[in-house]
Length: 559
Image (cartoon, rainbow, N blue to C red):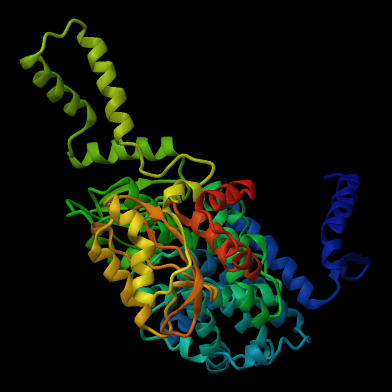
C-alpha cells in the first residue's frame, strides 16, 4: 500500500468520525490514535459493530487477537441471562459480545475507563445489581454502569420467572395506559391483553434506554412500515407521548415504526384452523420483526398451526417439537426448513405458499384444476379445453391470494356512515333508550339484531368504560362478529344531552359494527377527531336537518 493511499484513508476516516467529536492523531512513539470523549469512542465502536452485523460482515479475521476476551464476554452475557431469566435476541447477543470484546480490551490493556457518570437510573436497575455480583475483575467493575446500560438497551425475551416488570412498575403502568388508549381509539379488542402488554413492555423498556442514551437502533428496520399502517403510525405517535415525557426524549422514526409493526400485528385476526403441521418461526432480527413474520405467515398459511417464534439458540434446544421451520438464516435441523425474507412481497408469499403446500402434500392448484375440469366435462361440452384450463388457473390464483388488501389507503368514514344512518332529535331519553334509538336505522335494515344492541350496552355499566370519544360522544360497539350482518357507523345527534352512568353528558351516539378489523381504523380515527372537539359538537347540535348535516360533513371533507 502506498503512502498516499494511507494518507487518503486516514483523511477519510477522520471525516467519518468527526460527527462523533473525535479525531485521529499521530505521534512518532505511539503511532495513530483516536482521541476524544470515551463515551463517544464507545458509541463509534457500537455503530461500526452494528453496521458489520447488519451487512453480515465477517469478524473472524479479528478473533485471533480477541478470542480470550470474546469467550469471557459471551460467558458474561449467558450468566446475566440465567440470573435475570431472560434471553437476549440473537442480534443483541452478537452485538454485545463484539462490543464487549473491543471495549474490555481497552479497559484491561489500556486502562481506559468511562469517566462520565451515566446516572442513577442505571444504578437502580436489576441489570446493574447482577453485573455487580458477576464481575470479579476490578478493572471491569469500574465500568459496570456502562456495561449494565448495554444490557438494558438490548432486545430481550423475558420469561415468566423474571421480575424486570416489578422493578420498572411505572413504565409498565404507562404501557398499560397506552394499550387501553389504543383500544379506545381503534375499537380493537386485543386477545390476551395481559400477555400482549408484557411483550410490549419487553420491547419498550430497552427502546427507552436506547433513546435516552442515544444508542443507535439497527438500520434494518428503517422503512418497513407500508402505507397500510400510516394511520396506525400516527396513532402510535400520539400514544407514545406520555412515555416520551417519562424518559425526557422523543422517539425516533425507526422506533415508532417498530411500535407500529407491533400494534399493526393486532389488526389481523385470523381464525385458528385445525393444524396438519406444527410450525415455528426462527428470526434473528428481534422481537418485533419475529412477531410480524409470525402474523404474516399465519395469514399466508391458514392450513398450518404456527405455535411460536424462537431465536436460533432457542430452536437448537426445542427444534424437535415442530414439523416445519421458517427462518431468516440457514440452520442445522432435520425438519423441513424454508428460508425467507422478514418482509415478503405478495408474489413472494404466493410462491412460498405453493411450494410449502406442495411439500406437505396438501392439494395443489394444479390438482384442483384437473378435478374441476373432469367435473365440468361430465355436465357440459367444452369447446376449448386449454382456454378453460387457463381461466381456471387465473381464478384459483386470484382466490388464493393473500388476504391482505393491496390498497394504498384504508376506507374513510363515508364507507361506513351512510346518509340514512344520521339522525337528529330533540327528545329526552335515558341512556339505554338513547342507544336503542341510535341503532334503529341499522336495525331496521337488519344490519344487526337486538342481541348485538344489548351486548353494546354492557360496557356502559362499567364506570371506566372506554366506549366514549371525549365526554360528549358515546360509541356503543361489541366484538360480536356473529351478530353483525353489515358493517356500519351510525351518527345520532341528541340536542338534549343524555346522561350516562359515568356522568358524561352525551350529545352524539355513534353506534359501530365492524367485521373486518384490519380496515376500519382510518374511519374510526376520523370519527374521533370530529366528536372529540367541543367546537365541533357545538356546531353539530345546531343542525335540525339530517340531509343538511350530511352535506356539511361532505363539504368539510369529513367523509
